[in-house]
Picture 1 (tube, rainbow, N blue to C red):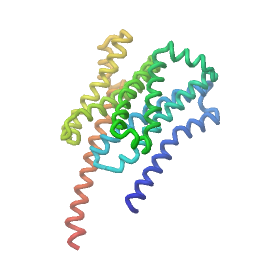
Picture 2 (picture 1 turned 120 degrees about the horizontal axis):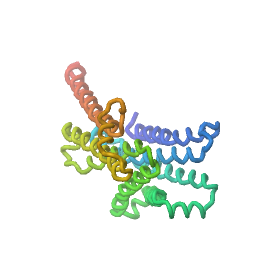
Picture 3 (picture 1 turned 45 degrees about the vertical axis):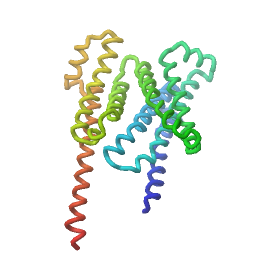
Picture 4 (picture 1 turned 90 degrees about the horizontal axis):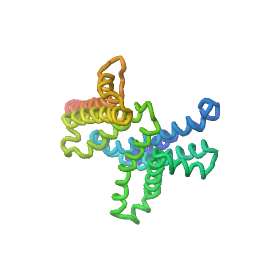
Length: 279
């Protein structure tokens, strides 16, 4: 198979996988598996997937650098656009949940802060999706890359929206924020540390502490909870896994994956040098 066909296949598989969550939500809605408030459940589900794909799009640059697999660059744009589309679907489900009442929706966005920042994130992601085409890239030239930097404040707004709409249980939002911290710290690290085991270990520790910090800030500063209780909950193994634990596991999985890949490459070189070439 030629490299062009491999890339085409990768893009096709990516597109199919990106459509699966929407198809699953539609299937469950059709067969009354979304509970008594299907529009509300669909709103929550599409919002979760929008954040997931947004983080995944941000993860492709580190993944390409860490795993040294260049084809990943060919699906980054698709995943970013998918994040915007799921955000639009998220808004559409909210619109439906308000009985398509534009006045009600506008008033809700204006008076509820978490909806205001969520709508701001939606506008940014939609604009970035619109200018993601090759045509816009040619028109905007250097400004195209500058405008795409707006994805970072959009991600921050989306995560704050995630926290605020989660209200009491912010476990998933904290986990997402911890992953975002890993992705941002990776970009700030010196280039040599980004792919070194020491750098990845430092990232794992820093992202875990960041997730713990987010949890402490939410419950301690905003909910007036005793910070020591939060720390105790993270130490108590009976309450595992906490969001910080999940971030640590995810970061550790990256290190293990890098080790497996490097081992595979070494074995391939040994196989090629000592077995295939002599024959």
